[in-house]
Length: 374
Image (cartoon, rainbow, N blue to C red; front, side, top):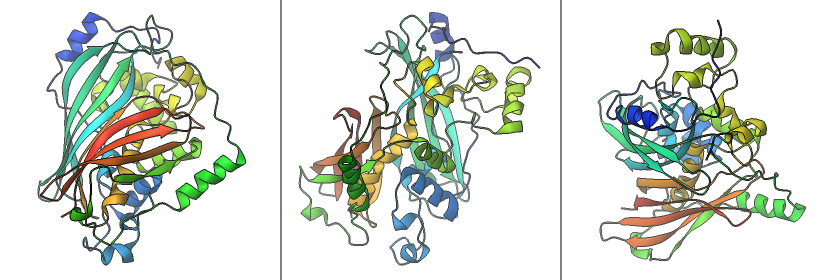
């Protein structure tokens, strides 16, 4: 069988935009990575984010909590389906842009999750790093299989950006891996090992004030182990397949595309070098137009929820999370994620503005979270 090679110089055409827009409302064939929230799938996801919260892995601690058992981080649902989309625009790179989440129910150990997704609107934009790109959106509902209860809803956005060799393609300046002094690494170590968690003590909404700081958590320095640990809990895309399975998916892409999950175009699966390898290989990242091998978008969104979960404590609940990714984090970067209280409501809800910064002082993401404390 001859496999096709995706053409890296493909540009976004009006015909592509018209075809993609016509798909609005189409249901997506989803291929979940995790179908069930088990002790291990929850732990693998939480630890893949670097979150050691005992609610997510310690059976004895969780049994004594208000939940009575191990629960999953709300963003665990990324590991069922992350809302990423690469359908249509053959040859145009998909890059995750962010998510708007509404969480309705806590995810408990033993919950089987059914994601149902459909394509949303396509819009056209221009920016500093690409002269013309599109944003595709996906609406996903996550339901509990046993009773059909709606666990969460998400509106995910994916940039579709021509690669570096295309006219007006993605054009980040290549950047060397950051070299840390010993004292910088020691500061990161201390930050990571002294993380503040509210824990079992309920946070009283009457004590919360506008301007209160939600302490930052630190992620990094990012390296291949960081990415491997994350992918153990939440796979990067349905194209992440090993050995015989990867050959099978390449064959289906040419001969039987109806057998594939269709949130990515068949040309994505037919590649001998998976485009998502840019998350681990600097040469592939360079061909895409990224400054270096870079982290995963849903991973970054999960990082942004981490300080909120620490701050709200075991009795709190994350009701909404919105994250917009502004620039990639590359191998060697360290990222601090935190927030500030912007509103305290009479019903016990607290609105938090979120931000992420790297070791260069650049803001790499922003967003907001709505927490209910009582």
